[in-house]
Length: 129
Image 1 (cartoon, rainbow, N blue to C red):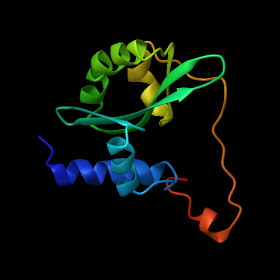
Image 2 (cartoon, rainbow, N blue to C red):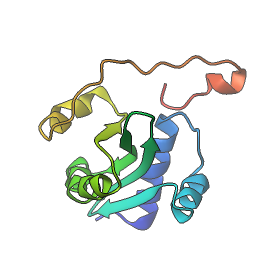
Image 3 (cartoon, rainbow, N blue to C red):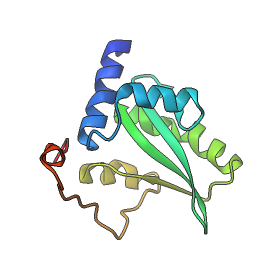
């Protein structure tokens, strides 16, 4: 079982790989403010956000860290809750290697590609790229 410190370190790694757009303290504040949701099962942690688009509402699996099997088990809690919130789709961004295990639970590759371009020297230090 991962300790609280190990779980925080893995969340920080997910933030780093996602481009360092938020500090861990920002994520905690988002959760406290109800702008994000914290889900935990065993050694898996998922942070979700709800996105209200003009044509649909989505639950976005924003940060996923820890044991992938434990993270996948969280779908049994997250997805029914998201449907109750009016969501019709779930979205996520992750490594290509995730598609194998995630595809078995109904996830599909989006037809788009995530890209980034540094605009400043600070942008050049984009995490995970």
